[in-house]
Length: 309
Ligand code: SD4
Image 1: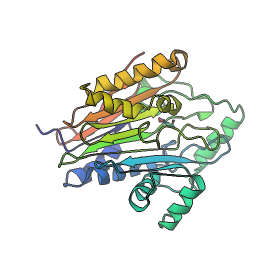
Image 2: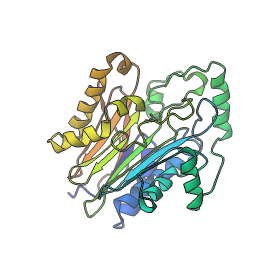
Image 3: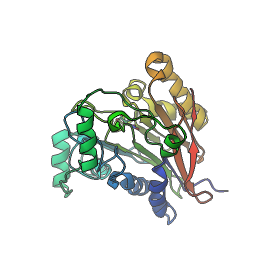
């Protein structure tokens, strides 16, 4: 059977995101449009407390968003620590298409977004403000693993002190009917991070990488460890050398574990990858990493990625 078009994305909320991306892919649309449309879903979902609208704020109460996008021609765009814009992925795409640059950060990114006609909005929902105020009572920065995965939480309920919902990035990779690959990654980052902190998600090569000759990769989890290892670029380069997607993700995870074994015990990082043939795979440090797959055969099948621990 034909392996593409296909779209894959991180965590349980990838199911709904893939469904919107599939509307583009199944009607002959471009992978780039599919991933942008797809990640709009969690960006706009106020119940998802770490992507876009409704995201948990930083330590000082600001919702700051990181996002990047990359197409089959190697074009890419990113916004870092962008505030007040509900769909940072679309601002990242404008950076790619309308400027000679790849990244815009902070106030400059907001200024550009407003010039491009995006609306300034308050992204801090009452629920996220309440969680932040609760967190302020102890103000301990302690990322909680796998809070993204609601099914996993049911199977292994975790105590979430002060509602510390933490990593919830969506990374999405798609191959369209022409066989072209694009990817998108968008997040509000680690909850209660220092103001100005940037994770891996908007960094091309760390949170996302696409090479149309080889495949694409994206990551989720504690971004510092992904940046340290240029994770997504590493996964794509390993696939270039012949690794299957899951094996490439595993090797990138092992690199993180090898470099910082003590740190790795207590954090989650997961990689998700697809190759040019439409084969896909994932691997994470900890159990509980989920991702969603959607193609003509299977719609939004949820699969648990493999893990080291
Ligand atoms: C970050 N990687 O800001 C993001 C957070 C994340 O699942 O992926 N959460 O470090």
